Image 1 (cartoon, rainbow, N blue to C red):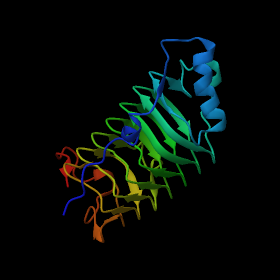
Image 2: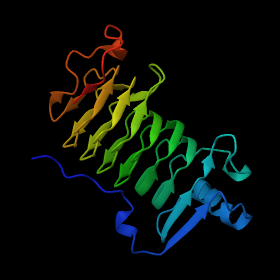
Image 3: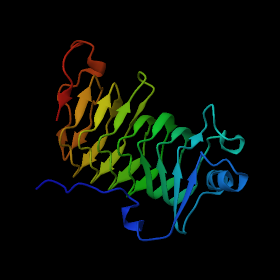
Image 4: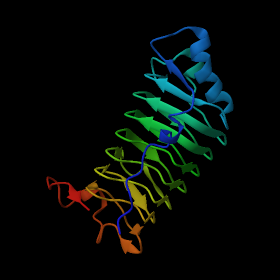
Length: 220
């Protein structure tokens, strides 16, 4: 029996009050909400929605230029159409969504994610020793920049990878447990030792597709 598709992590918060912050409104009190979130994290409260914000890249507001979110916790936040270059090492995320977002680079080592969504987002991740539970990667693109991006010992538990693309990514000794993989595309990845429910995700993995350049993306 295939796992059911996973909704965005904040979908259950839709009935809750929503506080929307957009980069189109640069008033200090509005952008301060994002700066405070990055500084202190967030463990409770009404759903907070950010649209078209920039963190850790050119164009970010001064208080959002630093992209370190280390060993903190974030709950019930939704980012839409936003851009990041972010360090999230050792942090916890619950019901945090990144919808249609672009991560230039994101360091997620030893982080933990529950009921989060990266739907239709693009990520260049390092998620070694990270754990993702009930997360949504539908329509997302996870890509590498050589052997420095991807991760080791990453676990995905009950996650939805429908129509997701893994592109030149290195995932070594990873685990996909009870995940939905319909239409998952694997493009020139190194998946040595990575299992899905006890079976190799990519048998006889060809690291970065060195001997099948030009071949069509492999679908699972």
